[in-house]
Amino acid sequence: MRDLLRTSILLIGLGCIGMGLATSAYAHHSMNGFDRSKTITITGTVKQFKWANPHSWIEVEIVNSKGMPETWNLEMTAPGILARAGWKSTMLKAGDKATFGVHPMVNGDVGGQFVSVTFADGLTMTERGQQTAVPGPAKQ
Image 1 (spheres, helix red, strand yellow):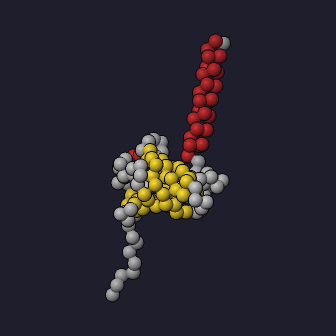
Image 2 (cartoon, one colour; image 1 turned 180 degrees about the horizontal axis):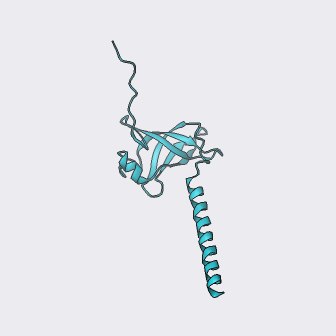
Image 3 (cartoon, rainbow, N blue to C red; image 1 turned 120 degrees about the vertical axis):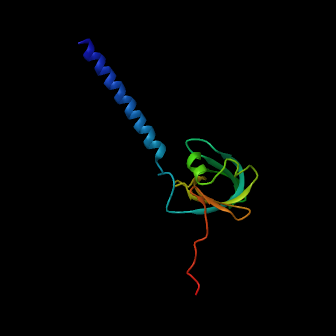
């Protein structure tokens, strides 16, 4: 009887832990907050580039349509993926001016999912690396 009770408590505990982990994983990986059918462009000044797990973040200060400063938080992928794509933790520094492609928030809040950045020197980077121009048709 004692062994049955101990086993039951253990199984219930493991089930609760499993449900908690599954819920956390689902919430963590949901992209429902971003409108991935739209890409908008914002231009502003980098306030901070957070090179951290599980997601890197860029804080960008822009001037909104009312002429007021607004801070946008742009969610990126993990630093390991960025590093494999050629990113460095020092690529964006506070004070850098850049243009960003962003999937905006569904609810209209400022912020969104990072799509691309174009630096002052013209270099464009995505989470998958340097973006290059698509070649046109061959000239004859």
